[in-house]
Length: 68
Image (cartoon, rainbow, N blue to C red; front, side, top):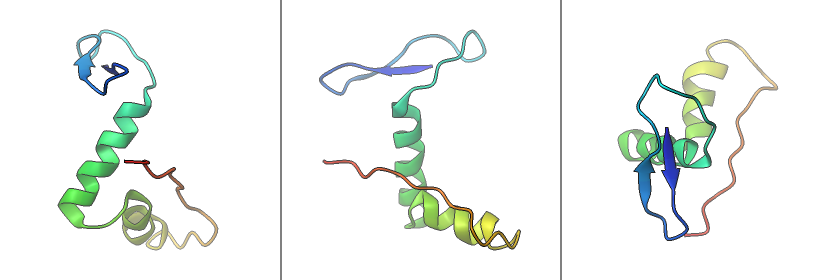
């Protein structure tokens, strides 16, 4: 589990498999990583590789953009 301080420092709160916590930092990190790897936003990649292939017409993923 990752945590984030007020100044933006990311730290490990607990070891993998030891606990569970939903943190916004996890979603932000994976969406940034996907953009760096695929040059597409997470919603674009999901639409292209999951939703379109499954013929989902009214399914999507919305994210709030970082202010940075």
